[in-house]
Length: 431
Ligand SMILES: Cc1ncc(COP(=O)(O)O)c(C=O)c1O
Image 1 (cartoon, rainbow, N blue to C red):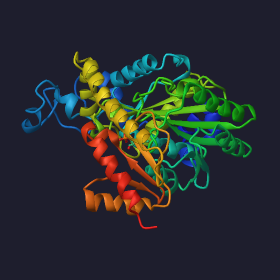
Image 2: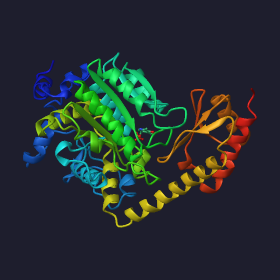
Image 3: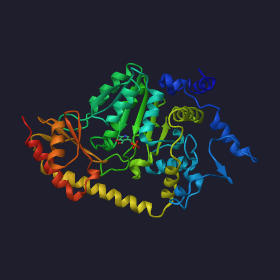
């Protein structure tokens, strides 16, 4: 093993992080290679910097006029230069400040500086690289975002154990979740991904449900297990009902217990309506970690990033910083939020008015971009195809059992007609 990896592992050895690391997580390090030598040169090479593979003239990166023309307010370095491996320092500091503002009970002492990743997907994938070995189990809500299967199972060789978060009456089934967590805890460690607001259901826990969930994690840690919780907060902030727990559950988990390691993956992609920017953050939180541990684990994340995509997109980070600084942003965010909330309310109104539909029952939803219909006696794949071919309506079928509708993408005025078509088509399904 590389001596730098051994050094990082020594720093982490007495913490749950070390015990939770995958084989890759143990091996990975950030080399004293081109990136770190170039960072040194940036400060001290006053005469000539021949370290980095970019092309400079007059102290600025060369940039094609055809690119610069569209971005007159930006310096070439904000557009075409490589970003630091862990991301633009200002963007990382700003995101941390925003996390503390949006999550008032988050304790700054127990969290790292966020690391920039190429979308929430890359944040989850790097976390899986570092903490999930082939054959190891990771718990998740079922149904789950399909990319979890691709990342945890097909890419990492892990085993996803799905827990249906709701009982037959549509109530948050904390006993079922607790049982699964404690069964894993008895094996010595728990890995779990929590995604609120959820994809595909559109559910976020109430205040009491969030606390009950955290109590389950606490019980697992108290029993002696190391617990790694990924908080996939891709849709953070899209909360439409008053009784929802409106912070990330990361707030509670990062200061919960020395054996609990919480990894928050979130970012502007969904929250700030810039999906294609591929810009997100990973923040580490644990009561059991001090600065040197956060630094060592951050260095491992940098190794995972450097060895996969090298660094995230520079222009996206520069644009994000400008948007945060812009006077119009807060007002536009409020307008966009209201658009989504109006669509949510239109869906809620329809589903409440059609509660007794014999073949479709909505799963609990109160947040996010989506809602999910459970199909009873109708094949979800058939329903999807019928809607597409006969009505020109696109929805997602999950397995044979669920239809997911992204109400975020459907104009409010169209929602009654779209849902009428879905409900009527389900009635016409072959028995
Ligand atoms: C639950 C969940 N997590 C993560 C992501 C990925 O987000 P990003 O576009 O930032 O990679 C998605 C996107 O669809 C998602 O639904």
